[in-house]
Image (cartoon, rainbow, N blue to C red):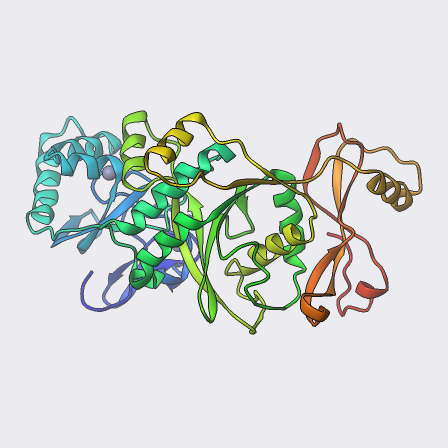
Length: 433
Ligand SMILES: [Zn+2]
Ligand SMILES: [Zn+2]
């Protein structure tokens, strides 16, 4: 990076932009559709289509700092001096090679990717470039939190090791981007994770929580909303448009601090994957947010608080069942050796179909139609009194249920809203989509 200029990426293609004569341009060999770059600060984006600056891999993991390098790119039309900057992205494989003193392997990979491995001149030039950067490399590395990884399916049995690895990462020396604003509280986050109850949310319950979150009214935050002072929620698949896989929270005197995560990994060979699991684990922080006690929370900016609050409230109102998960023998042994209490893992899932839901279903359809899949019929939020003297209010989600027979698959992403006197008064209506 040259100077203090903030790093920008194109909002259209999420590719980091270069600067040429004060203008933002797409990278030289950028495979675009000819659109104009739309520069936005990288810090505002959850996902950035960065590639490894050493080999071109699409899943860079670390930011390294080193010597500023510039290359002169010549083509028939133009000569371009391109500053590659002092911050380079490295994928897991390149990081492992650099750590092992085998940086030439990164060059081999880059040349193979570009189909230039038989051109000694190109190989030598790339090697020189890498070396110029690495010769002045400064110690340390920072986790890249904007890489879009393929989906990863975690099961309840994975949760203790996922939690432990994340806590170890917070206690470790690897950096997180300053925009995350948790540099000062990492030890605290790790301690909170040690105490956390672990929730694994099944697919149907995730679907329910997503629907409920889209209609979430503003809620007065207080620590009674959460099912505990410390916790880690893991959804079976990335939830909401932000593709959040997990959220952890810890309770402080005046607020709840939450961190949203994406799942990392899959799509790498075994050895590289092992490096990744050892160094980082399964979850990478995307962003943090706070819920101040007694403050009205609405998630207009979709930071993740709506899906968190909706999930908490649905658990509190027992919209599904919360069952303790069985803990593996190996995990039992490991915790016993470390003299730690067994991890508290809960599975949150939609209950087996009840008679009430049957009745509701037949009332709602009324036409004797048969369905080939089950669909969510979502209800609405209503404030309910609770707490000492019933002086507190919290929203309760009314009448969500699955329509269709239990042996049918659940059709995801289908919302049928019941229009009643509550919702029909809304400006713009609430018609199903
Ligand atoms: Zn673009
Ligand atoms: Zn690489």
